[in-house]
Length: 75
Image (cartoon, rainbow, N blue to C red):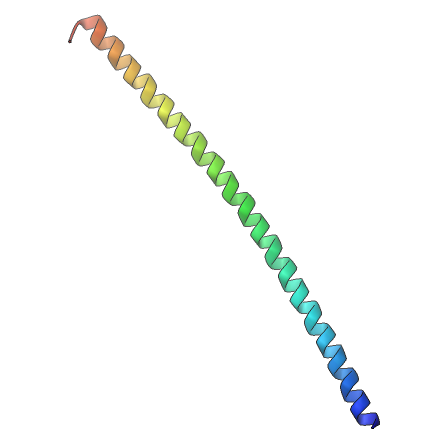
């Protein structure tokens, strides 16, 4: 009977250790997911800013071409 109690206590201890490891793993993965979501959002903002910059460059170039054509009567 004493041996069974010891085995049960060992199993309880192992189960608690395993449970603790599972929670640690989950917390670690949640942290990694949050970090990746933040990084993804930063990339999204950076891409939007680059896109706006390129659109402005294209608009400016188009405007300059239109001005050049109108000044030189190439129509």
